[in-house]
Length: 505
Image (tube, rainbow, N blue to C red; front, side, top):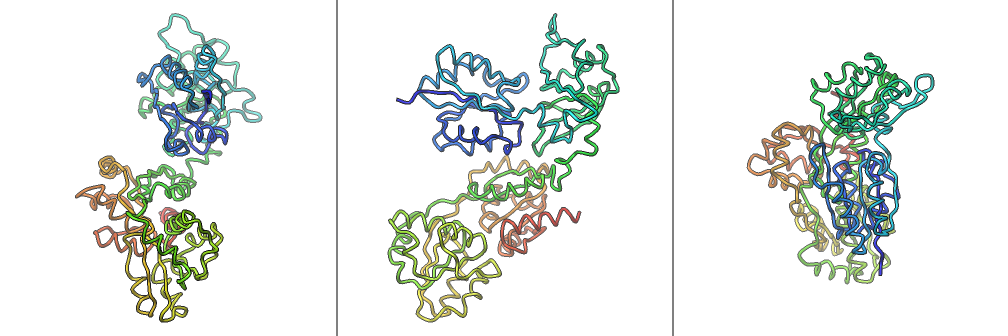
């Protein structure tokens, strides 16, 4: 029988790209994940579909579960012979109370491993352009809890030594105690004019940086109404931000962009926009699901030898087609037909299966394939098109006019996504969303369905970017005027046109 084990895993400071390879491996194999509010939800996408998720998030003065209960929860789950991941923001042993959790596990002889995470003490300042040490400026730094209760009769802090003995001071979770912290530093010899910074949601697109001084910090934070989670950094190194700021200088930094693509495919667009600094809200308007019956597709695959051309109009069509081939015990050797792909991304996916498309049109839409195939299609030829259940009819119609026998079979369906339409509508209504992206006509129609009767008005409060003219036409049919339309009808083309839009502002 499998023995239970607990992995105390550091999720890093916030940017989900800053997690270790080993941490991802732990998440993938976990039976149960116990996670807190500082661990980015994107990390959970790596978990198994049957994983048990337990949220134990702790905000200041608002604890979903007490630490003692979290400790016992880890014990209980491990005693059920489960592989448990305790996913914690930052590093488990840097004010993460991971030591307490480990000691509790030891009481029950439960094996555990610690997977370190990048601590916010160094990564958050780095994302703000502030090195905690710098030649000629700072040769030492200290990481200090900002959570010490100022009402205690005795402090564990050695303020008389700490205030002046260390060049750079980094206080974690110290915003609410800032008046106490700064007064103690000044009282014990740190100059009120010492440069300081407060960094909220560091490493994430929501990052805010307030540059101030020790003497002014408490008042400036109150004036800006900065709330946790945030760190407070003190020292001359703060002055380097003026030259070294890089993260919040990105083109799309601070701009919230709505990604409506299916959840399984959203990551490519999201990752591309995040590299430019965008805050991407993934709200899939569509979901890719199997057709109600695979029978027509399976019959077509069984009779593959009769077709002269096999035409793929999407990456999804490729994936579902080859999945059914595999289910039938076949591989690419069963394909004797020539193959056409609607665009470069579809052609690239075909290459993954060892198929190099014979035709990839210059224009990535149905009209492009028709034009590219016109000289190759002869009367009597048979053509198979595995595609979405609902799609434009122009391709099969034009091929039929050329004398071909066309068999269009549903390889998949697009249905409305599981996004909360009311929450999304509120964000659009309040002007929180800067740009809405559409990657197909179905993302347009399904987003409108999700938003309800005021959908058009809500969407037009933001800029709109479309992957190509067909998607743009669907927008305009519903009264939505696209701000930009990609010239290359791919995710790369969409990112390029969004980049050009903001570079031109």
